[in-house]
Length: 67
Image 1: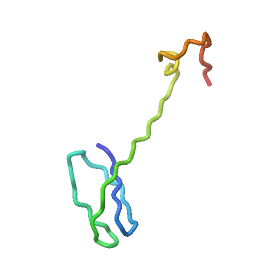
Image 2: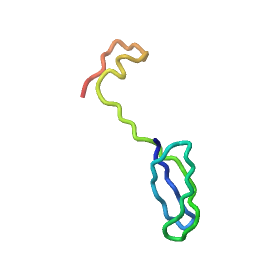
Image 3: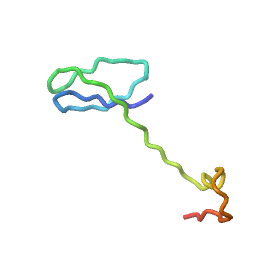
Image 4: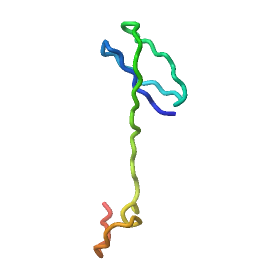
């Protein structure tokens, strides 16, 4: 399930986690106005070696260094 960022015209914002097909009506805690929904991109981390060495990159004859 994605995390959505709801923003109000008064400047208040909240992060809410719910399904894509759900369309909850979110009310602002401060001014009681309707909040509009936006999407928060998930954080992605690539760990380990092998991402470069297994790709079809330019073959320069060099092997990648492991840090």
